[in-house]
Image 1: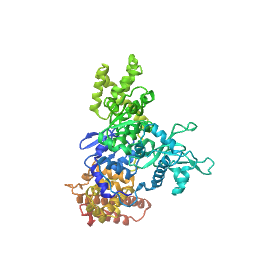
Image 2 (image 1 turned 60 degrees about the vertical axis):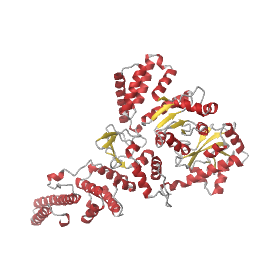
Image 3 (image 1 turned 135 degrees about the horizontal axis):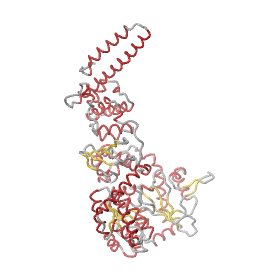
Image 4 (image 1 turned 180 degrees about the horizontal axis):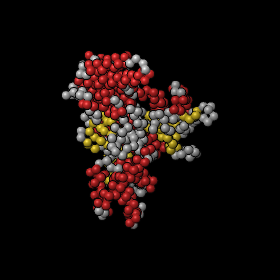
Length: 617
């Protein structure tokens, strides 16, 4: 369903672009703007600029620009409606709906297939003999019927075509079920079969509450497949951008101002059932930057609670580094050996778990304990490796003050001079910059192609005309339209920008450059508009040389001056062409009178246009 324009405006006005971008890009104040390294291409010198005043961003390196919605769409690779909904949740705004379609409509058949499959699996649990086996498994794990209902747990029949037959009854084509990851095409192409057979089913929901995939746990010893299998990647299910349980727990996370991050389905379900509900699960996959940013929509404080075994510790070590690099606060819960969150809360209760969580360590103390357990602190060589590893993590922090405080803490922990640690910190930061330069493919998953045209490459007159129109709106745009033919821009992108501005000006709506960016579908046009809005280019200095610079920044005078300059430049080109033709005619011995008369006419027109109003040229 389409989101009303008024609601989109409310969300944009309620979202501070600096706060939205800061978790991803380390921004530093530079004058009235903020500057950082662009997340969309590899660079050593910051050229990514964010304007709190205009609520827009622009990279002067790759040309990418836009507003708060554009940034979220590009960095998280989500469609416009999802970006709006994400920021609405962040701002606490409830979005109304209208009857029109939105860009998600192309995926609606897949959402419908997954939702209906989830209902089918849930019904199997209570209405089929095979479901009793899965129900006994859930009860044995300690899950109540209420928890089963809340999370929609279910059961897939031990059949090759149970879901296929259900799909036919519901009017869902096998090809749609295949695209949703629910059935598999046979090798010989003769048909399909169910992907999930005879398993306990865990529906996976998007943050917005739509069923997008499933996790499936084996119930029979003769099942030849892995203990857990998941839906494959589909157009609606990207494992790296999904957290299990977030749809049910996001409000609790926001309220608690922290998120407990566990690994598996059972870990989350047991904690949730025990009343500890500010929890999400990475579903057994390696933690990703996108998942961390997803949590960051609701809280910037993350508490890692993984298994106490060696694999869990390694996962936490990697997770700590990722979270710190995103600029979030991270602490780590140390579980007793042999325990996981599921077993601990079932054996010891919610109060003991909360007490353990209250003692969660900061990342530095956690790493020190891990290195001590591994025996690294018993020798100078091991201590060197441990300290370098910790400094490497500190070097990724976006907050300079926080980096300094952690260096001080590390100095006190190991008895090492702060000056030595700061030298090591500088080395690590230098290595990170070198890797960013020489391995650009690792720089960002959101890498974007460089814009074809930049403002700097445009003729100054075109640039100044577009700038004054964007900043002043319909009255000035109509003036340019009246005095020219389609703006008479010398570049294709200039003409496209003008066409967009003219169409927008005639909509009789309040002029809002930041808001109109949402309606620009041409990336090159959007990037030119945002670059011009950042005031990097003032009225061209070339005007002064032509005695055409206005004494005051009056938009009408700027338009007049631009059009006068354009006319004079056109006449100068015609004069040069005529002189070239005159020389050629002289060399051929032809009559020169037509060329001389033409030259005099062009010179007179040039003198008449100097200082004449645009409409009298």
